[in-house]
Image 1 (cartoon, rainbow, N blue to C red):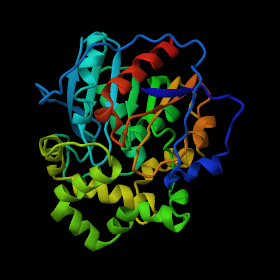
Image 2 (cartoon, rainbow, N blue to C red):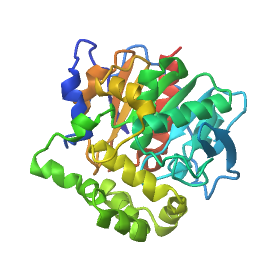
Image 3 (tube, rainbow, N blue to C red):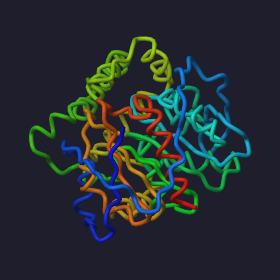
Length: 351
């Protein structure tokens, strides 16, 4: 069950307020109004969880050889689903068949540092900065000859989708973003927060140290399982479900990408100068104009903003939905029908 709100376009927050997205607030908004003009094509029927994807495909794209799973008809409207940290494409194992049954071509790539995705050169800098990850997805779309797609994701994946929708709106037909507007900057990452908020970011401080890097490398399985439990306190996943995704963390670049991502966000690591222009644009917290539905679980244990704090950053057709029932941070895997339904509905927005 979800609650939904179509936000008033006049409610606009300045860029300074939104850049706090690099840090957390902890209240989850609710809503009770149905958005104007929404025609819902309901997801129906029951779906048993998938044990595995039948095939992982590989394609050279930009600096990577990208591993990805695909479902649905090859000529269907493309939907690209983007995972976060510390998760992988199995967050969408129960979303993909629901969308495929509606005729969508569903593509689920492993981000750099996960699964079977590999750098083409040993000499390429293992860069985890957000704009580099967004460029990866644009490169994959080019390689697959996809001009425009619906983008949907959570955590790092939502941030990546937000960035693409902002910088390359012509490539994004519509957007589904868990936890809303996640575009930040190094400047925002340096702003101190109240102690209770800082406590939620404990792993970022850990990753800032050599001990943290070594500890994550040594204990990444247990570390990431802990993050799953903290971020989704009411999700009773079993060991097999976690282990299925944990295999993707054995990627040889995983630790380097994760550590660099969090250090870069705090201004403790340099990025690549070729992305400076993109990061400068993103630091201004630009609005997103494409049709969007944002989602939030009612029991998200990860740091996140209130939906009302970012509503004004979406200036196209827009609604927010709060998914009830103890749903945590890994919303696509915990509430696959709600996630799939948001994609189907935001497609209607774009028509």
